[in-house]
Image (cartoon, rainbow, N blue to C red; front, side, top):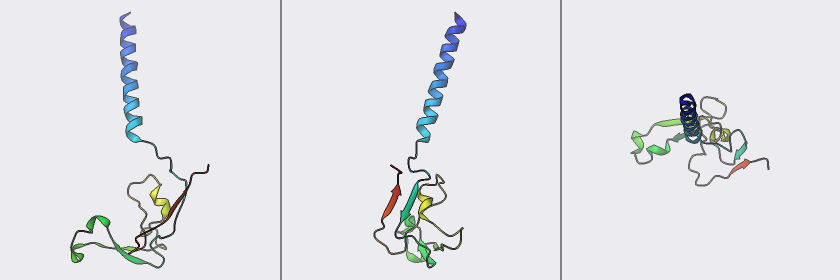
Length: 106
């Protein structure tokens, strides 16, 4: 009977661990869906600054280049939903509005 109680407690602990893992990782329903944006930087190549540096004096900001023909400097729409926290989409410089379309295949 003692082993049955231990087995029950073990199963209960494992369920708790799996629940925490599943709920902490979340779920991205847009992952690898078709995506498009009408205002993406890089064609032609252009300079941009990080949004986080917007409060800094212009001389203190880091100047970056977006170039659609260079894989290391391109920021296409698919980077919004690729499940990689390093990659990102970048709109054209000085654009106040961009339209983003995600096809959910429904």
